[in-house]
Image 1 (cartoon, one colour):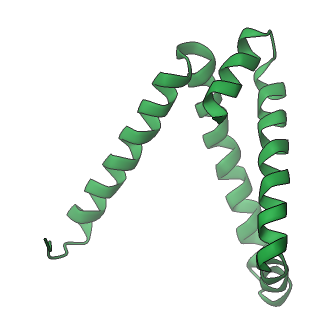
Image 2 (image 1 turned 180 degrees about the horizontal axis):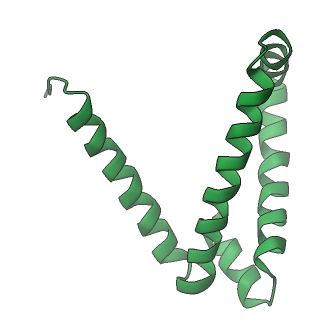
Length: 109
């Protein structure tokens, strides 16, 4: 859903910053509803308050996520939503393969 929405926003003349803003606003709304209903927001708040490195970890994650989202938006803007989804899936498959290479585990059928 989101890559198609992002692609439509780009075709409508929106900038990468605007597309990122509206995408994040939509995801924030949905995640707040889901997290608030399940109690995860309170748990996350308690973690950040109780752990000295919690806020730093959150800041580092935010920076890395911003860079990743910027690259993703550039792919959507330049090549379209289908290519962006294919690139994301290839990255995930590569991550799984690398995980099995770095941390060998037995296969089960």
